[in-house]
Amino acid sequence: MARTRPTFHPLTVARVEQLTDDAVAVTFDVPDALAEDYAFAPGQALTLRRVDGDRDERRSYSICAPVGDAPRVGVREVPGGYFSSWLVNEVRPGQVIDVLPPSGTFTADVSTPADHVFVVAGSGVTPALSLAGTVLRDGESTVTVFYGNRRTSTVMFADELADLKDRYGSRLQLVHVLSREPRDAEVTSGRLDGERLRTLVGALVDVPEVDHWWLCGPHGMVTEARDLLAELGVPRERVHQELFFVDEGDGAPPEPVRGDEQTVDGPSSQVTIVLDGRSTTLALEQGVPVLDSAQRVRSDLPFACKGGVCGTCRAKVTAGEVEMRRNYALDPDEVARGYVLTCQTVPVSAEVTVDFDA
Image (cartoon, rainbow, N blue to C red; front, side, top):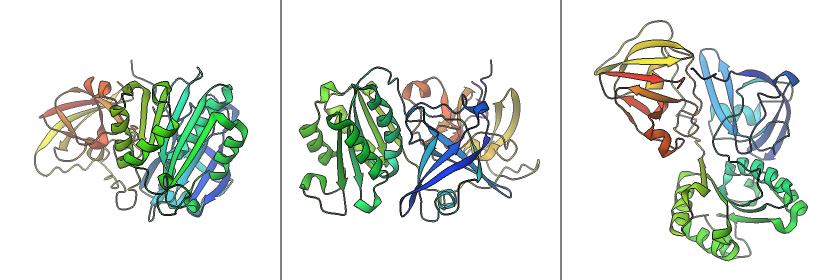
């Protein structure tokens, strides 16, 4: 049975709050009729869509609100970024933006009180704010946040984090680490790398007592933190990670070719795409990702970041052989069961079937 695929709905921007010189928080109004569709779990994200002529762009932004509040996303401008620059500099309350219902796996069952540690940098604090704001409400959970930035002026949600600290006291430890601005303690002055994290964790965290470790930020920081936790004996199932894909300037997805014209140069594969119960067989170049090639004829294929991070383009290979070049979104178990990120997957065998409904 084909799974029901979420669809975009036009939502009105309720508020745009300036967080730093280059970052904003955007809150959406959700009509009562769509309240159930846009109920989110802490740590999930919203995919936004912007259509400009033939250009159809999507980006995923993490929700920064606690569960029960209106959906609100944090956005930092990427220099030259088509989407983030628009959100930070042009979008105003009252505008309507197409938004997909919440999605994402950077979450967990937080209904039971637990001890949480966050290792985040830059805009990686966005989902952490949602998670921390949610779990602290239970009156028992504890939260430690190690938050890396360049300078005080670049810290997103600084006031809101301070408010949480004032409200929850000893149940929240908040440690700011600045790489380009000296702080009182040497351990909090510099990049939030593996060695600095080792010192901070050793001084402030009872490692065996931590139920959930949340890692969110650039690839290098997440990798070093994950390696440290493995060295400290933290079970893999207690570690949650998410990367932020920000190469949205020159890395913008190519515009799809319109019409039925399909030209393939070089070796090709016959690739069958299954989406919403409809199958389409195409001749696709073997060196080009399935998503990019197939969009020329199936413009309805789901995508967001095209960087192997968000997981929006996830599908299952049910026949044939493919190669997935990069994966930051799927668990090893999903990969073992045949799931791929079609934005990073190229066909290898002569015939391939990719099922987005599986």
